[in-house]
Length: 157
Image (cartoon, rainbow, N blue to C red; front, top):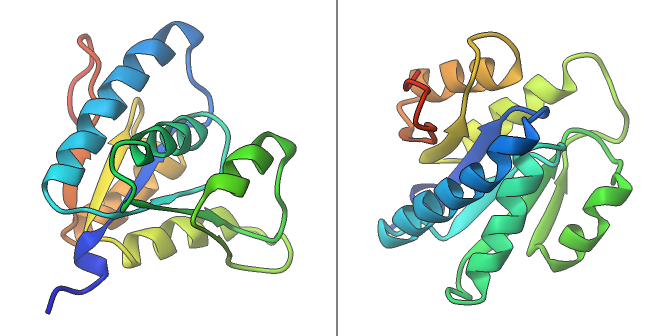
């Protein structure tokens, strides 16, 4: 029997994105999500932050039009829904809040949770510090299947 975890892929990327890179990031996200679906991933976890998380969630919802069996779960570190997420949250299959209130380290706890629930990770990493780099170290240490997004002038981490 195949476990839910083996069909689950999370995503991680930076909150601040250069506007000129967004169209190429969207294009690469579409390709990688299609690859993940082809490999059997059906449940996708997105972290609920601005920037890459938002872009990934929007792109996953677009894929539900052609692949309705995929599930989008938004994972928030604490019980707060920013206004920019309301429309996407209404279309997501589920919302997970890991804490009732904010606390120092809650974003790292959210990242560890997503890694622990996943078999693969889609990621966009531009620097080796911060939350995305931390999440990638957790993902590599946990043996997750890696789906990097690299833009033409960037190298894989």
